[in-house]
Every structure is written in C-alpha cells, then in structure tokens.
Amino acid sequence: MGLPPLPPEHLLRSGGGGSAPSSRVAGTGLVASRLLERDATLLLAVERGAAVPDAWRQPGFAARVRIAREHLAPIQEAHLLAESLAREACLVHGVATGQDAVRVAYAIRWLEIAMGVALAAWPGRVSLAG
Image 1 (cartoon, rainbow, N blue to C red):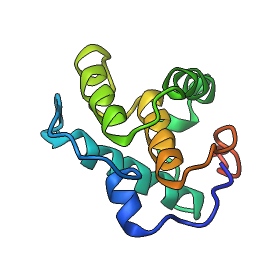
Image 2: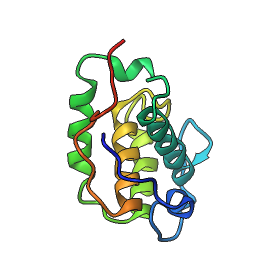
Image 3: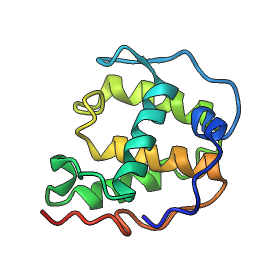
C-alpha cells in the first residue's frame, strides 16, 4: 500500500476529524468509528510485516478491495464513512466479521481521510504470498 508516515494518534482515532458517530456495526457490538480504527491498525501492522489474514490471500480479494474503494472515494468525512460502514454491515454478509474486502477498503479510506492523502492501489507493498 505504500503508506506515508503514520498520522498522529489523535487523527487515527477520529479518522481526521468530525464528530464520532454512535452507529454500531451489526454483529460486532462496536461503534463504527472504533471498528474502523481497529481495521486501520491491522492494515498498518500488516504494512509493517505482521501476518496477513488468510482471507486477504483469496483469489479476487484485491480486485474486490479496489472496487469497494472506488465506491468509497467520494466520502470525504470520517463520520460519514463510519455511518456508511454501519449501514453496509446490515446489508452485506461478511462485513461484520471482518473477512470481507469491503472492510479493508473502509480501513484504507479511513486512513486516507485521516492523513489527507490518496493511498496507492492495494495491496501495494503488502505481500499476499503464502
């Protein structure tokens, strides 16, 4: 993914500003913004060499991330992204479990909003080889 330097901790928590929504993600019990933080933290850990989740290695996963990112690109505010995730989790099987490319796309967009930059195509420097 080729991330620039990490954003200050307060930006990671807020997704770049705005009020944090209280929308909970169905099936997780978590507030959407907290789930985005957790997913973004996982992405950053994988970028630094942590183990890649097996689901991310599946054929077509990166293409699904790309498609989802295209749909999320117009969202410019963290609280709107969090609200979108909360709605999507009610509609799309797998989003609540984190085993879905949509969650990766949301986490990437969360980081983009926090850092104020567009990130490279995923997976970038992340090696998905087994």
